[in-house]
Amino acid sequence: MKFTVKCCALVLTLIVISAGMSAQTASAPPNRGIVEDWSTRQIVFSRGALLQNPDLLYREPRVLAQAMTRWQATSSGKTAAMSNPAMVNPAVTSGKINVTRAGDWNISLGKSHVAADMYPVKYSNDPTQPPDCQNDFAAFGLTVAGVDGGTSNLVALNNLYSPNGVCQVPAPTVFFSYNTTTIAGLGKITTSPVLSLDGKKVAFVESVAGSQAIFHVLTWTRGQGTIAAAAHPAAMTSLTFSPTSGDTLSSPWIDYSTDTAYVGSDNGVMYKITGVFKSTPVLAASWPITSNKYRLGPPVLDSSRNLLVVGSGNASLYAIDVTTGIVQASQAIGAIGAKYAATISSPVIDITTGFVFAVSADDGSTAVLKQLTTSTLGVVATARIGIGGTPATTALVIQEPSLDNNYYNDPASGTIRVCGTSPTDTSPYEYAFGFSPAGVMNTSSSLARSLSTSTAARCTPMREFYNPNLAGGTDFFFFGLTQDCTAPGATGGCVISEGQNNVLTTATVNGGPSGVIPDNYSTLSQAHSIYFTATKQNTAYKRYQDTLQ
Image (cartoon, rainbow, N blue to C red; front, side, top):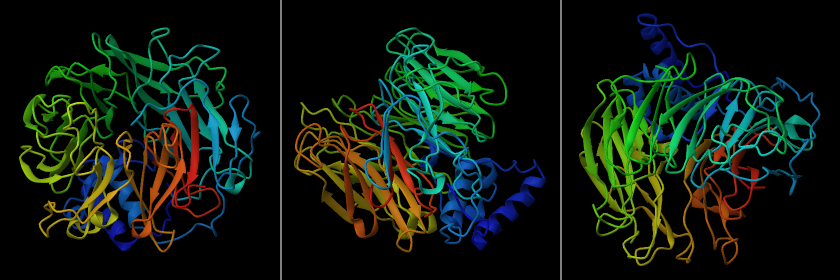
C-alpha cells in the first residue's frame, strides 16, 4: 500500500501523541513495510476512539497501517520518482502468463490454487514511496502437496505492476517458489499465510487432514525456484502443534507486539506459539486450550483487552484470555444442533469500542449477523440476513461482514455489509446496516438486494478498501460468486468490485475468487489492483480495482 509522507493532521497528531506515550515505556518500532493479509481488516476502529487510545498505533500495526492509508492527503503519486525500477529479466521461466487486456494479467500456478475463502498476502516495501517493482510482492499458499524439483505450494511474484506500467515489463516475475511439504504427498497449505513486518519471513500451516498440523516459518531467498521446479527451503523452522488433527480453516493470527501466533485445529483446540519471527517457535506453557470438539475458524485478537475471539463449528463464539489461557466467555451464535449453524468465518472486532461482529447461517430461524461485546460476548443487536441454511438439505456458510470507510470516521455514519441469502431461498443477497449514535447496529437494513437468482451460487469473503484517488475517493468492496454470475452454470463464477453508489462491476472467474487482497491506492499505471486466485482453476490474477481490467 502506498501513501504520501504528507498525511492528514489527525494521523500526525496521533503519531506524536503515541510516540510521547511510547517513550515512557518502549521506543517506537522502526520503519517497516505494509503487510496486507487475511487479518488486516478483521480489526476495525473509529477516529474519535483512536484519539482516546493512541497507543494502539504502535501496539497493533494493523491499526497504524489503516489509519495512514485512510486519512492521508489525496495524491496519485504521479509526480514522485520511482524508487526501484525493474532491472531484471521479466520472463517467467515456468508457468503460463496471459496478458488478457490492457490492465491485468493472470499466471498459471501449476497444479493448485489458494483454498476457497482463504487469502494470498501482499507486501509493500516502503509505504512512503511509489510502488516498488523489485521488493513489493504477493505470495500464494497452495492446496497441493509440494514436490522437490516439481510442484510448488508457496509461490511469490514481484514486478506486479505490469504489463508494462510502472514496472515497464510485460509480465510479473517469480520472486520465489518452494515445496514446503514435510509430510510427503499429504501436507498442504489450506489456510492463509502471514508475513513478518519486514516481509522477510512467511508463516503458514501445513495440514494433513485428520492427522496433524505443522506451523512453519520460512525465511525466503529471492530467486529460488520456479513454478514448475520448486526449490526446497534452506531456512525453515517447523513445529507440529496439533499431533492428532489437521487445520483446514484456522489461519494463524500474529500478535506482532509479542511475536506470538494463535492458531486452531479441527478438533476444537486453540494453540499459542511464541518466538514466531524473532526467535524459534515453541508452544506456550499452559496452552493449548480446548474449547470443544468442533473445528475452529480463524481467531482474532483484541490486544486492548487481551482477548482472542474465535468461531467454532458448534455455532458458538469463544473469548479466550491470552494472559491466563482461560475461556472467559462463550456465546451461541447459531442454534445448537442446527445442521448448518457453524460459525467458522472469522469475527470482526472494533478494538476501540469493544464490539465484535459475527455471523451464522442458521440461528434456528434465519441467517444472522450479530453485534456482541468482546469482553462478555453478550449480544447487543441481531440483524436478519435471509433464510440462510434453514432448509435441511442446504449446505451454507455465511462469510464474515465488512465495515465501510465511514465507520472508521464515525460509526454513526457508517454501515456494515454482509452477503446473506434471499428471504425466501438460498440465492445470494447483499445487506447493509447502519448504526445508532451510540455505535449500536441497526436491525433494519439500509440495503437488501439480490446478487443472483441461483440457489447454488455462494458468496466469497467480502473485502473493503478505500482508495482516495479514484473518482474523488471510492470505498470499494471486493468479493465474488462461485457460479451463475457472468454466465449460467458452475463455470460462470465471478469476482465483483462494488464502488460508487453501490454499482457492481464483474469479471468471470472459474468457481469464483479466493479471498481478495487489495494493492496500492496509487494511480500510477498498473499500481491500483487486487490479487486473488480462481477456486476452480490454478490461476493467479491481478485486476484493476475499479474496472477489473
